[in-house]
Length: 418
Image (cartoon, rainbow, N blue to C red; front, side):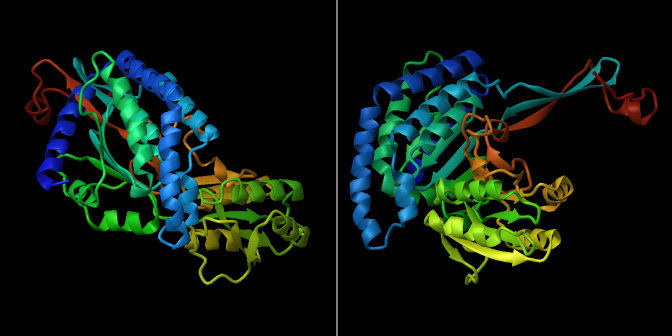
């Protein structure tokens, strides 16, 4: 798409975001229910489009142009479709995140400060494979009153078009819903143009591999929210229960190996008596174990797992903080003190005790869905749902109040929370 054409899209999205900020909760929820119903009634169209994408992607996998993990994310099945539809409905049932009073403080008599949640504005979403991302992000954007421009990968273009077409049809039938709030673009030039639109786009959210996220961060002035790698760890402590350790590690690695919250490294305390038995159990499930990897920064996205024996809890924490991508880590232990130390000292967006790393997900957190996982330490962290797509503003109500009165001592602040 030409830059001027993309500029028009960005301008229209910005204008739509201003209208979206005033949408009632009733209109937003109706829009979401209309989308869920339209997708449910026309899911065969989506499956047909997805089948075409899969057929076109198969030769790319064979010749090495597309990884098997990306191909796995591309495929839509009945389970993913069910979750996609339910996710939209769940978002409609969540509390409206806009207009919430976060702070109310009386600065002086008749002078009241209020901190209120509001939309971010225009979101630019760049993602690879995962066509269900479109419904997730569109739904979250609608509920949080944000406009959004979506750019999916070429490997899922047919599925993306089919889903967005059904979303747009539903929105057109929703009375009072603004046009141009959701837009989809397709070309590589659109990515370049999107990254240059810092006047109109308020936040970029990438969902893809390390190279994509790195490219985006290095080529835009727009704030970027997301994560580059999903290098997750599990520490098997000396007091770990064998059955818990086996269940958690197997689920974390095999339930969906290509997911960003799949475990990549396990650290085993040298005094854990069931270590050999645990490793044997992992191999029996088809996991390939590597004791001396080329790099501890490796994200396998496959049934491959690095492992290392450590001398202590402290060494495990040091290793994780050194090599983790800041995504999700877990400790398996029956020692509550060690669990507390681990959860406080590990510097990641998600830190668990006796729990699979696969729980790092907006849907499983009850967010309805997510726009992605953030390893940032500003604004939003972990699975980013509705709250992560809002910001806030400060309002003051008064009656001709001026600062001069307070500077000269005529009046005094009393800062009373209401």
